[in-house]
Image (cartoon, rainbow, N blue to C red; front, side, top):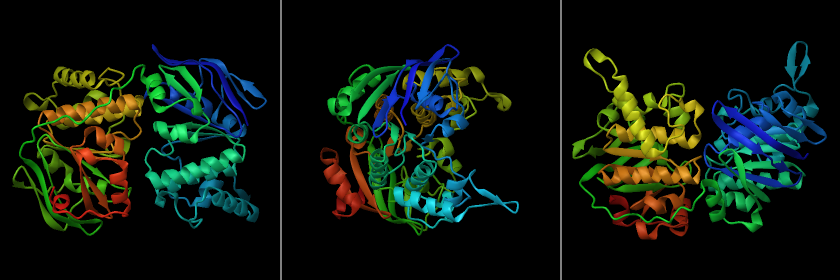
Length: 501
């Protein structure tokens, strides 16, 4: 079913989120939607899903035209919205999630009919989700949860599917699974709006692409007529010059790991990271990258091996002990594990190092001054310290977490996928902040599966697979051709250098 908007406008106070946006999606085509964080993409998706009303403009879905939708109307008109964070009932099974709200009542109980269960199985086969029907949704991998959301849309015979960052948290293999399903949906005549920060992914998968900036459409092209650099320039209004890793004099060893082993998934982890160094750690999802970060930050324990921090034994029993040792962690899931979404950005930034006066009173002026310094330095938007993260885009939320640990004076800063769900402009600002921290002597561990990100900032990269470090790559050799084979196990590097760091 075709979908189009005409001159949509939406403002929040003095901030204009949508300023005359007109787009369209037609059956059998994938329409890419890209833009920097805060460009208006999320507001547009919410208007199309019926979550919010536009101030003016119109929408047309098939034969229906109106000024606004409700969620129920959107569903009735065949619109399904699939978000980056799936809206599943985690304790219910796969079949129950698909049928939720569509079961048949029998003797006072909600039961699925045989024909419904047959349709559920057909939908799961269509998206390639091969799990027992009673498997709780919360027990599925992120990729399988996305496939379940797509299966829900297929079951409801959605004619228009909006996919908002469906692959942001997925590795390459799982992304490919999603791509294959999108292509099958396109072949079946579904109109798809595909929102993503992965620009090459958009060009490879979509038929045409719209770029938004400042609440407006600034570019619309067939993907065959454009390249990534064109999209970047349209998104941020200027080109980003290529950056090379700057030469820095490295200091003493900050963190030393020797034979760190954890029965749950780490085996003989041995490496050093020095003051002023940016050490990249890469690998596929499940390789042990994030688990290693949690061990260093005291969230998880380890059974064997040793760690030293600046020459002293280091074995944090909790994150509180790690923070006291001036270790900071920017976790992979900022919303769940890092941010207090309903506290102000200022309080989130100063959380580890709150300025207090005698008797424990918080020095509010100092707190505001510190927060403003980092808000300006990292380009956080909106620039008001009182703004809550819940009202910020993903990229600006990420900057708040990074500002927190830099202002706290972290000697060791661990960043787990800092560019995930972040547009190219915000990513450049985040990498600039990491470079500045390294120049100031902070030891940085940067965990990322984005090879391009590692090329721009890492001094060297350790590659992990199945809980082990399987190789080390020097800065001049960082590329997909060197990182991916190690991560996938098609090449093994066992030099002394690779194990010692």
